[in-house]
Amino acid sequence: MTVTTFIPAKSTAVKNYLTAGFGIRSWLLTTDHKRIGLMFFGSVTFFFFIGGAAATLIRLDLLDPAGRLVQPDMYNRLFTMHGVVMVWFFLIPSIPTTLGNFFLPLMIGAKDLAFPRLNLLSWYLFNASGILAVYFLLVGGVDTGWTFYTPLSSQYATGHVLPAAMAVFVNGFSSILTGLNFIVTTHRLRAPGMTWFRLPLFVWAIYATSLVMVLATPVLAMTLALMSMERFLGIGLFDPAIGGDPLLFQHLFWFYSHPAVYIMILPAMGVVSEVIACYARKPVFGYRGMAYALMSIAVIGFFVWGHHMFVTGMSLYSGVVFSFMSFIVAVPSAIKVFNWIATLHKGWITFDAPMLYALGFVGLFTTGGVTGLVVATLAADVHLHDTYFVIAHFHFIMVGGTVSAYFAGLHYWWPKITGRLYPEMWARLAAILTFTGFNFTFFPQFILGYLGMPRRYHAYPPEFQVWNVLSSAGASILAIAYILPLAYLGWSLLYGKRAGSNPWHATGLEWMTSSPPPEHNFVRTPVVTSAPYAYPDPETLADEPAGRRPQA
Image (cartoon, rainbow, N blue to C red; front, side, top):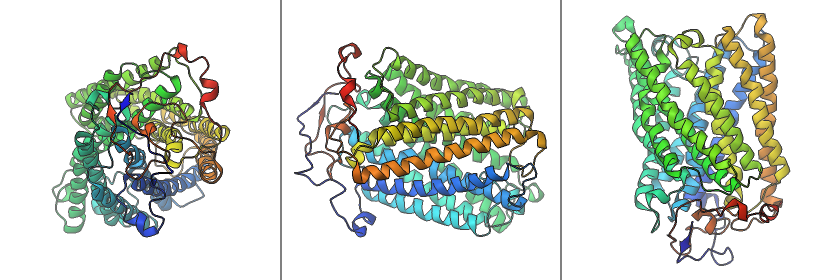
């Protein structure tokens, strides 16, 4: 990307966002999108390990077919806690609120987001709702599962169902404010010359995600509010005993929750596009097709919610339509995988940690996508519905894909965020362990589901034990892979080598300013005069890769 009338900021002349103010007050009242992004990073990391701790207890309990580690009621509360915390307080916000918050203005040449105070408010709402949810999930617990299905949740469930649901309700406002902020910023604050088809694909991904957040999240909020009204006021909405329809809740819930999958995966696709282009030293193959595919996924994702309900008794015609739409939404996803592979073709590839994480994403996402077509097939879903096959499928997409891309982006932009390099050997090891551990954890669950083991069961027949033991062993590898980055990234803050403004020789406006960036991102407003990903021909780079990667 060519930039003119622009002078890169020098840290000796301009305060960066880290040194603009050291006090706690300056951080808690900040409107700097970079600081808010870092505060979101701290919050989602905290919730990630809360949800991970619940998953650890679940996997330990499933080592024994009799499930002797925890009581059945506690087991129900554990998988509810794991689901609620991981879905709404890590997976959905992880990339948009952290990397999106930090880099969207930088990548379009803006000084900040359009509404800085709303950005800070969204962080406070997120933390307030998260702390309340964790509190009520720990004290008394919730045993409905993360879906809050009625009439179980509205009439029969024990524990703090309403307070936990209201915490998720409040969290929705954080998502809406974030999405609104990103949409307005993308429309109104692009640098001169930054046309729509000069936007980096990460910006396209965040924009598409924001549309889903703004349009779908209110439906979830209304659904939880109606559930609370039924439970608290006795209004017959979902309970058939008082004139309600339990399937109405599922329709409303999945109308939000399937698009929510794309809130998790669309930003991940944007991250992977940036990383693969940089480490293949090539422009993204079919850039416009990639942008259109991102928007297509966001739109078509609103028309497939019914594939979660094939066994609820919906009409055959409805099932066929939802099955067909589920196959259609796979087309733009397949386009993206094809284009990533085509970008790698004849590229000058360097297998640094961000690239390893990105390639891991491609493998895990493809596996999850192909198995998604299996459960989108009416006849197959009858057998596989509510088995461990479904758990494996959505974990390959939602966890394997999203987390791998999140770590890819974190490692890729870490020198820009902190001004420091990390130890590459440890980072590569963590990337390899993530891919290996994830497959050992969740691939056996495809087999368990095919064999007929239902999900959410506290005990199971002994013939399934070997696959559960293998899955739990893989989870221990995965835990090490997740803890490692905390150690070496923390070390790099103190001892890592200075990164310079562009250690990867990448394109993009974020690499044209100092590391860390100055308080207002740029000394002078950049002017963009060419398309993104303007990497030279790989055949001219024979001498470059050896010196391209500075070592921490």
